[in-house]
Amino acid sequence: MKLPDSARFSTICIHAGQEPDPSTGAIITPIFQTSTYVQEELGRHKGYEYARTQNPTRFALEQNLAAIEGGRAAYAFASGMAAINAITTLLQSGDHVVVTDNTYGGTFRLFDKVLRKYGLEFSYVDTSRPELIEQAIRPQTKMLFVETPTNPVLRLTDLARVAEISRSRDIRLVVDNTFASPCLQRPIEFGADLVMHSTTKYLNGHSDSVGGIVIAARQEDADWLKFIQNAAGAILSPFDSWLVLRGTKTLAVRMAQHNLNGQALAEYLEKHPRVKRVIYPGLPSHPQHELAKRQMKGFGGMLSFELNSFEEARQVCNRVRLMALAESLGGVETLMTHPASMTHASVPAEQRAAIGLSDSLVRISAGIEDVQDLIDDLAQALGEG
Ligand SMILES: Cc1ncc(COP(=O)(O)O)c(C=O)c1O
Image (cartoon, rainbow, N blue to C red; front, side, top):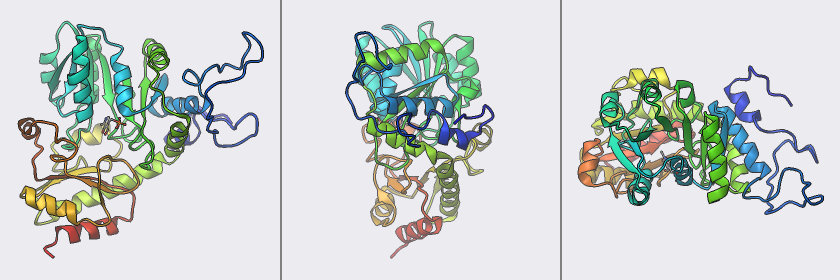
């Protein structure tokens, strides 16, 4: 099976990195659940020695995701956080990193509570304003770590503009692309050096696996990531690799439905008299709607809305029946969260206020159910009765 060079996105998702199993012809890459490989004689083997270092199921996923993001190589890790941690091993003590201020809380925790102990320094800035990035850059700045859109206020960073800034100063640009998925946004095309995902979210898409991936554009970064994956050992298991590989086959069709449902829910909520404000990149009311149209191929399934009080937000979260009150995102089922008391509870209240995350904000990860059922659920949860 030869994937033509002209293959388009959904074809790449289904076929890249996967060949029928040579021993049986199985069309699906098997789960190679083994810790070691038998060698034919001393110094002669099939390229596989030990499963932390080499695993065919993981290799298939890595090749698949390298092609999907348009990178040189990809490396799979035990979680999104393990992937971010691996990226930071490209840095040395004394280096400085500029980070999106509204970054995922776990990323902030890793940087602030762990990596600062090893002499790395971090500045948190609103990366939707490139002039603030330029002001934060120091001679020691070696990395720009950007998340776009952000969680939960869906602020966007102009990838082409930040790539220009980082390239002109020889700073690595890293993009956490978890929220958009490569179906909607491919940061390497804009000039990013490294892209990472929590595969736990849209790439796996079925809420049944935790994992992470790093895709590298430069050979030197790919070489280091391959080394650190084996040296530190936070690899993705064969079964999880297989699950994510199954997930990416339907990425394009799932994202098409996430886009439709996200847009329909956002439009429904924007018209609802009890809703104060809706944040969704696909709405003309989003302050960066034009940028979203330029750099994203769809607006995704993530939206947030604000009610008039914490009490109203609490009621809606407690009343939904079809939507599940749960952390995480990107699965086929619709989830609702109250960021101030759930995912962002560890972020100080004044910092939450600074990014526009109030106690009355509710976030939805729109799944791919029939959207009318989702609207009916929201209607009853927002109703008086
Ligand atoms: C944007 C983003 N990046 C990274 C992570 C971390 O991923 P994981 O939970 O797989 O470690 C998450 C998890 O919620 C996330 O939302």
